[in-house]
Length: 299
Image 1 (cartoon, helix red, strand yellow):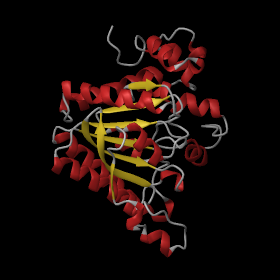
Image 2 (tube, rainbow, N blue to C red):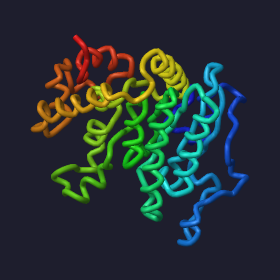
Image 3 (cartoon, rainbow, N blue to C red):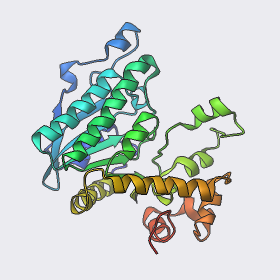
Image 4 (cartoon, one colour):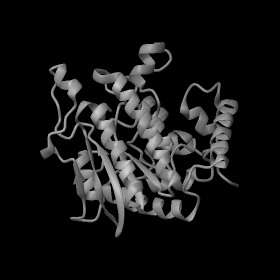
């Protein structure tokens, strides 16, 4: 089995979709690069750090994008964001069966911050337009850089988020929090704390992601296919009821966990048995325990 974590964005998208079906839009041969990086005499990538296109997943036509964490940490710039927006708009125009976003990013590039911020806002709008068209959007998070910054918000706009334990999801990264509020607030060098706070298992227990899978492409492939089925069987578009449900979860968090200093305290408060063992559990064993205790779980 191929590790999702260790694969590049291009490898992930080819391995995730049915063999030989992926058709790339704006491939590296087109040489479409960021004008901002060139002006700053900064190295560029001929795909600007994101692979977009369409292919089949279990025979269904899906549109997909994979960010490349090896180029500027998957950071979003003007061209990078425009490629994502273009993919999403084309998915609507062509009546895709689903959109898959293989997200790996530290957020917006500092080199082109304003352009990147505008691009992320346009991606958010485009994701919601896709959902409004009745097309499910599925986000996969399992890369070394995690999913942070504006793309963390984009992920939460999707129908489903699938993560591995190695994946991370948050608005601000550990280093950013430490820089702004000091090491007493968050020690970014404490890797165990970082993963307890932003890692897939914690996000699952808080209701931020919908499924935890093992670190292999096949597991992500199976989960993505299942997520499309689940989304199509339910309500694809973003509804007022769903938004109110998300708001209620946030209110519950503040009320129950506002004074907690470590995710371990939250897991214990949720009633998770032997919470200290959570980091050592395999994905399936963790899910079996977590389903009865995650925030918002039905009795």
